[in-house]
Length: 282
Image (cartoon, rainbow, N blue to C red; front, side, top):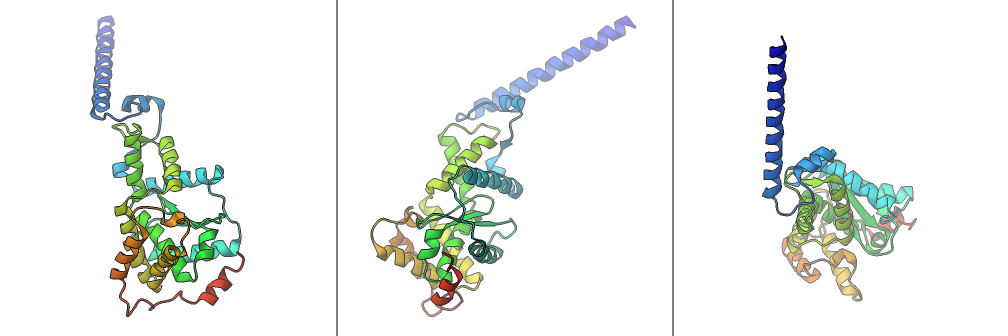
């Protein structure tokens, strides 16, 4: 009995040593496989840190991360929400109609109005879109406003924030072979939402998605062209909505090629009086 027990414990000890050696070997291999990293996969596992694989992020994970980014933006005061119920409902109604006709209608969308006089709109992953009061006031009609919201939905459709997050994490040495720490992902997400440094390719793709979305939702496509053209002709400092590469003039030329002049005004949202009535609280 004693010998059997000794043998049993000896085998179990050797088995545990073997397993521990395998885990260490795997962790070392994974660590060495990725040069840019914050901590190793094994360290993150021991600490119980939640890790995201950006390359294979599911819709549910993206929405959850977007919710955390949104909460951080609000709690930090970097996105001060405008609380008028009628204005928020109006923006949400436009946004939900566009989202339903977008190329990615399967995720939930959240549209919020930011109390800021600057002409700006931005989006983050997981269906979160923000529109400044200054931009709402700048638009002449609903089609112009819808074109901006459609453009931001286009960034979500293209999953541009996820791509930018991965590039930023690599550049900052935060991406481990296992993925990215969720808390670090939230901070990067907040930074990306505020700085809005989209690439030429991403902006043009968002324009294309936005224009298609505008048409599918029944809006006159000329609204997108009109809003960009009006801001370009206004002169002075470039609104932050248009402060990204490529140049606004290039985007306008490309949109003009995509919009048929004979059907440019076909659709809803071109009545300026109706629009002013709907945003009169501002």
